Image (cartoon, rainbow, N blue to C red; front, side, top):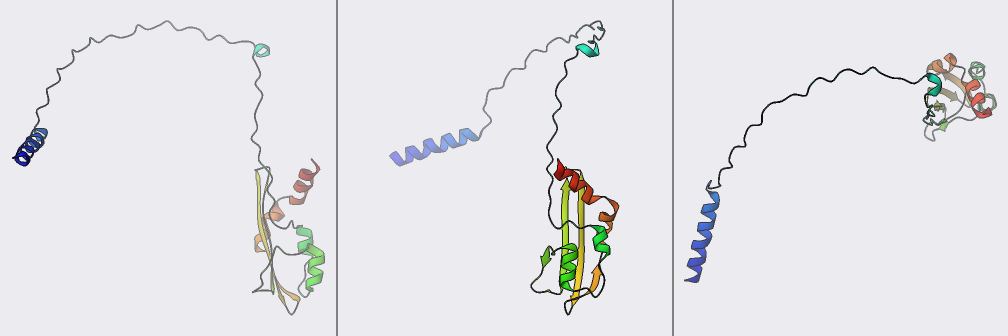
Length: 159
């Protein structure tokens, strides 16, 4: 008997919850429309330039990021086919990358940003045959010839 009564009560609650028996909310009264009166235009007053407060300017710090070998285009132009690895290293320095699987190829790579403004990216690839320079790939050095890279660095490090 108790189970039937519980079941009937539960069924009634479920069925009444599904009906739309909520009371309707009365409509709110409409407010009258009103507008603000136009205010007279005031002349702009400004202080003389000597009386204006001067705020300090804040510059964002842009670090210099140096990654790779710094090459001088004059030294790179002195490279000649047939030079030994030691002569090349004495002239332009050791390479950025010597791949253990391609020991015949040296890569000089640089990705640098000076003061967050001047972005420098270049790559010089040298290929050796029997420890003698056999190929010079300067295709990535067009950018270094257009800017005075070393002078910017000397100026930067002198500060």
